[in-house]
Image (cartoon, rainbow, N blue to C red; front, side, top):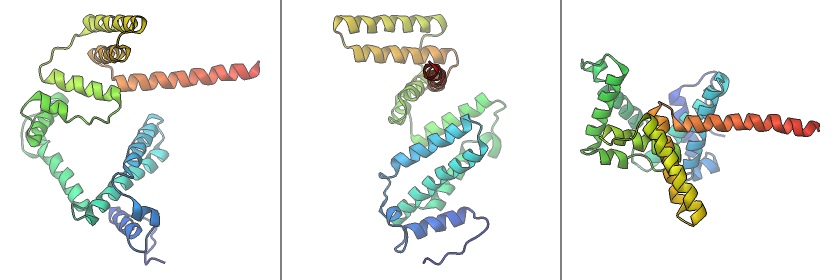
Length: 240
């Protein structure tokens, strides 16, 4: 039995202490065995579950899922602390300093009267912090394990800020039609169908961006609509 005082309400310090106990010699065998790599997928899944709770406007579940996301942060920080690299206080300190640095209009008197100006400040300071001297370096730092549509959207957005002239409006839609035609020809004539379909999807992302549409959200909502349509169809099939 581990020496631990039960409480009616816990705080952040308690969470860190609980994780230390779970990872300790008398703690949980499963928790002790975990590494950054072994719980990497858990982090992704918990983040998506929190987003799902947001979409469903489910505050009760959102509270729980945010706790699970926070648990992942504390878990990874504890693993790093045991390796002598950094601890939870370093994580908190770094994010606080980042927020202060990247909001000079709040903490340093720099002007930013609109959200666009504030975002421009953030991006410029981020580039300086990361040592990004070219727009290409900004593209290189996009996480390659993002969902493909989100990855393409971020790639295009940063490239546009770096000076790349993507087609807009009708021209963007024409680009989608042209890419689709190339994909059709590749499929029927034995060309590189995968490459052409990739170009088609990339063009579709840009066409959506030119209309202010988030492609990841658009496809997600289309998939949810399909699920509801399938539910209704299945219900009709069962009554026949």
